[in-house]
Length: 139
Image (tube, rainbow, N blue to C red; front, top):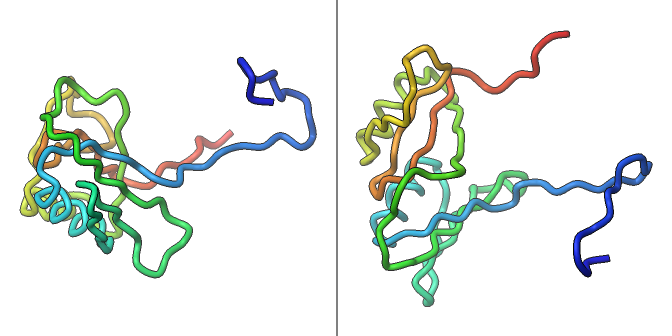
């Protein structure tokens, strides 16, 4: 039922959930952001006629896509949500590679003891490169 607020599904054996299917970024300069994010992620880009583009992971249906949605306006303020990335090699080398593509270090109040490095894409959207893949604490 989708009228009003849904009832809590707590306690039911057939509880459903959602998974991240796509990450959407509002962008001002579509071509700049296509170049950055497709190279950063190794995704294939398909530019639409509507001022947007979709980025697809090559040969992978299990990974989220990225939608670059043309907004015509610059980003304002700190992101309330952001992606955390994990490299397939040393995180320090990945940070260097991303900076070479146009990212820049971002200060969002970190103290230097975190297990991640904060970057911003060429339009200022923050994202993190994790030092290692997330793990559930033992116990």
